[in-house]
Length: 278
Ligand code: DGL
Image (tube, rainbow, N blue to C red; front, side, top):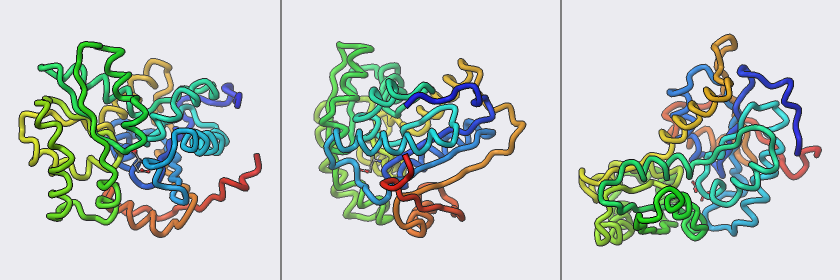
C-alpha cells in the first residue's frame, strides 16, 4: 500500500481508528494536546468487539481500515485500539509509508519510567493480554521488570452500558485487580480504550499509591513528539476539523460518544468497508 507522500504536509489530517467508540478517549486527549489538528476517526462498530477475536482477524480488519483512511491523504495513522495495536501495529508499519503509532509503546515507556519497585501490572482485553505485546515492549526496555497481567473481558460491555458507577462493576473490578494487589505492583497500565472511564474505580480499589497509566494521555503526548520530530505539527493555518466514520449504526455511535467524549457528535457517516472500491 504505497502512498503519495508529496501531497502530504503538516496541514494534512491524522487518521485514527478503533473497534468502536472507545478510541474517542484518545481523540479527546489529542484534541487537548494537539488542538490544531484535523482528525479523521473510523469506528468499526459493525465488527466490534475486537478484544475477543483472533489476532489474524483483527489484523485483517485493521488493514482494511488503514486503506480507507489512507485515501484521505493522512499524514500519520494512530491505532487507538489496544487490541488492534497488539495485533496489527508491526504489519501496518511495514505496509504504510507514513508514521504509524499504536497505544502500547507510549504506555509501556511511561510505566517503565514510573515504577519504583519494578513491578508493573497490565489489564486489557483477552486478545491484548494473550498477544504479549505489553510484556514484550516493557521487557525490551527493562528485562528485570516483573509484569502481572489480567484479561478483563467483562469491563468493556459494562462501560458501554454506562455502568461506570454501579455496584456490579465495582464487584467485578475487585476480582480483576486482586492479582495486582497480591503481586504488589506500584504501576498499572490501563490497557484498553474503555478503562479511562472507570479510572476512579481502579483508584478506589488499588489506593493512591498505585500509579495508573492512562494510554490516551501517553499516546497523545507521544504523537505530539513524533509529529514535532517530523515537522508535521499543524501550524494552525487550517481550522481544526473532526470527521467520524463508522461501519454500523451512526446514531448509536453518536449516543455513546457522549459518554466517551463528553460531547455530542453530529455528523457520523456510515461506510461499507467490504464494498469500498479498492
Ligand atoms: N478498543 C478495544 C481495546 O482497546 C476494546 C473494545 C473491543 O474489544 O473491541 O482493546
